[in-house]
Image (tube, rainbow, N blue to C red):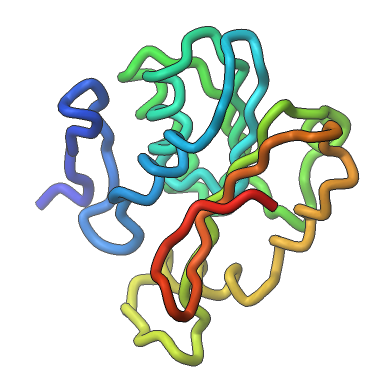
Length: 175
């Protein structure tokens, strides 16, 4: 049996390969992409891109963006590259830990920085048994996300992040 599924997003405008088990893109990256007020010619960095769904959704709405993505897990980074190619979108995908970003990414500034960090910490969540999903939970405990301190962000840059409030479910917020 094939380990990936081929899923349509945005009414079939995008075809996304993603693992059949573990983390799977759903509505969150679509909403995240919709919240970014990007304009043609601007640059966007996604921290923890998974299979690339958020950046691909954004690129489907806004042409001519400079897209950069960072993903910790090599299998997901490879799928993000493949998804970008099959949807004819240029995305520079780097496989790296957010605690140890490569100099070319650290040294750049971006018009928009987006992220869809893991929602559930290991304690209150039920373990799924999938190593990729568990890596996301471990990252969600704080490892890596502290690099998002904004020290390199442009003034007034829009930084949408999908977050979970204990009382209201997923929200897109500006940090």
